[in-house]
Image (cartoon, rainbow, N blue to C red; front, side, top):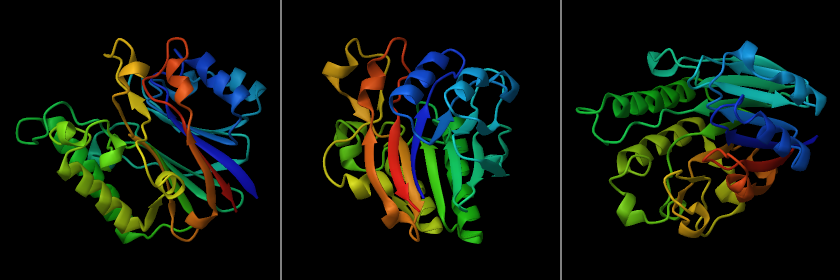
Length: 262
């Protein structure tokens, strides 16, 4: 079975319903994982998505904030949803396809502006969220699994526009990168995107603050697709649809894609 998966922080699924439909029509992933849906589950606009072939969904939502959803052309059943760090946030959903592949969709907290948990509660929450991810994957080793989402960390030097300037900026600090690596190690996860595109600058997020985001190109790779090592070799075709960042009234994130032969 071959299927293509995409992950996208949509920054309001209702506000950007037409952009989701555009991606479905033009790129047609079999599975589309969304983060920051900012909607209760019953308010997610499913009618148009179903009309485009996405007849299956597992999701967690809340009004105005957070929210994760997996929209699928393929049958999928919910197999988990964890409240990491006891934040009472809708930041995780897990679904399983009929071939036995489990897909974890995460929206890791951004962490605020100051990388110091003593003065910034949000940064501490981010680290605690990642620590529980690590502990859960260490306690129950995932197999035949894919992890995707806005992890809000750009781990490599070539995942940001300027490594030295961003070392003290939340999303690229050494302590965040260390925590993310611990999650990867605990679950025996493989970074599929960098497996396919091992070298070079690669971004999935560009700030709204830039007058011309494309020309400035001060991006970060915050959005990820991982796979457990037992299936990571089946991944191919990784890419980031940069053009979506330039669509009308866009999200500040671009969709990330990978194809799996399973």
